[in-house]
Every structure is written in C-alpha cells, then in structure tokens.
Length: 438
Image (cartoon, rainbow, N blue to C red; front, top):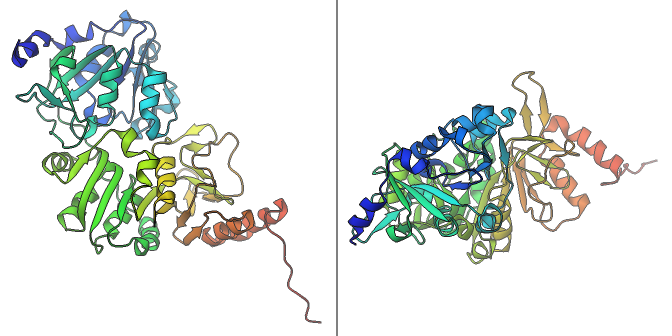
C-alpha cells in the first residue's frame, strides 16, 4: 500500500473515531494548541456510554463538559499535570484531579503511572514520506505518548506548522485512526507586565552576561525580564516554553544562538515563527527539562516566578494551603540545572506583597511560615537567588541566620520589623542589643 492508501484506509469520521473509546480507558492528550478539540468533544458527547474513563493532559483552554458538568465528570475524569488559567477557575467544581510532577519526569509519569490505552493529538498534514509533524506544542509528549499507548488517533489540521527538532513527527505506520478537522490553534495572549514586574527585572538584567543561555518562564514578570534583555548580545535559549518575547529578541538580533524548547505557547505569530525558523528546535519536554543536560550548558540563566517564600528560602509555586493556583512544572528542573552549570544563575522572583482584590488587605509574600498544608515546590537547599522589587537575596549554601537576614532585606519595609521579631522568637537570629556606652 502507498502512504496515501494507508491514509484513506485509516481515515474515519469524528463519530467513528470517538466510538472506539470504551469504558475503563485511559486517554492521554497533547495539551493546548496540540489538543484535538473536535475529537475530544466528540468523545465527551458519548459520556453516557462510559464508566471510569480517565483523560490526562495539561493547560486545557477549552471548557469541555467534563469540567463543568458533574454528570459528565463522573464518567470522564480529567487529570491535569499542569494547570492553566481555565483549570484554576474551575477548581471549585471539584471535577478534575491534579497530578504534581517535575516536567523532567513526564516520560516516567506516562510510562509508569498513566499507561494510556489511547493517545490523541493534532498533527500537520502528511508529507510525501508518510510523516505527520506534532507542531509547536505537540512535541511536548507526542513521541512518548504515541509509543506507550495501545492505539493512536490523530486529528489532521492544516493549520499546524511543521517544526524542526528531534522526536517531532509520527509516521502513518504508527497511527491507528485519522480524523480530519481544521481548527485554529488555541492561542494564549501575552500577559502584560506590571510596574513591580519591571522593577524586579531591573535587578536581574544586569546579571545576565552576553553569550548566556536563558530560560525564562511564563507571565508578566517573565516578559519584563525578557524584554529587558534587548541590549544584550549573542544570547541562546534552552527553555521549556518559547515565548513571544523570544520572537522579539530574535528579530532584534539579541538571540543569535540556537533556541531549544519543549513547546511554543502564545499567539499565531509565535506558532508560525516556530515553524519557519530553523534556528528553533523543539524537543520532548522530559529531555529539555533534564537537569543533567541543563548543567552542561555554561552561563545558564534561569528565571522563574513563585507565589511565596519563607524566611529560610523555601519556595511555593503551586498554591496556599489546600488551594491550588498553579503546578510544579519545570521549577525544580531549571533551578537544579542552573546551579550546576558553570557560571550558571537561578533567579526565583516574586513581588514582595500581595493585595486581596476583594478586601484590599495587603500581605507580605515573604512569610515566617506558610499556611497549613501548603506544598513546598523548591526546597531551600536548591535555591540560589530570590528577587523582589527591593533587591536580590543570595541564598545558596548559606546558614539559616544568613538566609533570614537576606530575606528580610528584600521584604516590603512595612513587614520587616514583624518578620525580624518572628525570626528572633524562633531562634533563627539573635536579638543583638547595642553595647552600652556608659
């Protein structure tokens, strides 16, 4: 059979493909722009036929019924290994589960825990050699998902750009069913930077040397740092997420080295840029985030945000108490990789205060202790630098006393006295009284 013959033999309607899903299945889907919305919607519509179906993915930005309808959620249980804004809003519904994982362990998660029976993803149109490309988002878990699953269903979408890199395609021989449905790739708009974000960036940017390789996270703070690098030279990128700001820095000539990422997430401009540019290589996330690979890159600079930090340098990125706000992602991976890089630097950033939008109450994000049940995302022994708008705390391999002093120095001035009193009472630091002159 020719490749086109195979294609036609495996081509099904959305209804036919969805009918292949049975009770007790474990479905793994590529996330965000690689998520086959039409196919998953068709599967979801048949929920009354199912019992105990599980669906694993991340950063869902389409409001499927298994999120909002408890009757559907009882039969199709969604598991997220990284939450996006929509998932965060829908947590109160209690309709899905959260699976904490370091992104460097995604391959192990899929192979050892998820063990999918079916893998679904969007792909580009087939080329002359019988290959489909996973696109700017699908390389993330595309190869491991398709290899581990018992059956693979792909949604061919002409809007998926072909991207460069390793492990970025799947052959028609390895596909069980094909559906055709063109969809606009789901876009995630760029988050604007606040004035505080820009102040934090001003502390970090001078430490980034020309010729460095950078990893910068997602959000307004990350964007402030990225755009602040526009006077640098000869930068390269090794990051889990390729962003809009990296398009800007590349077009300006600031990023002249290779851009290696686990996925691109943003606007259509970014997706097209990722497909057209041979400078960009997109690789599976478990490889990009491997701390041992990161450590081999000299002058590696990692910049990530967090929610809270305590006086000893423990970092919280996932939530407060039992309230989940975000996920683990690649925080640990890049902190550990950067600190082992020759000349490497790891910056974890946060505004020094948080304002409750409902009550107007202002609280410190640097605290003596976290609310009960709060998960620690990055252990204090791994942390190198913590940054607020008030400065940089040098935490790496320091004593508890030194750590506390460093953290108090970058806290909001309105909370420093209280934090010092708490630290003295706990015995972290000594209450040194000035010597009498009499």
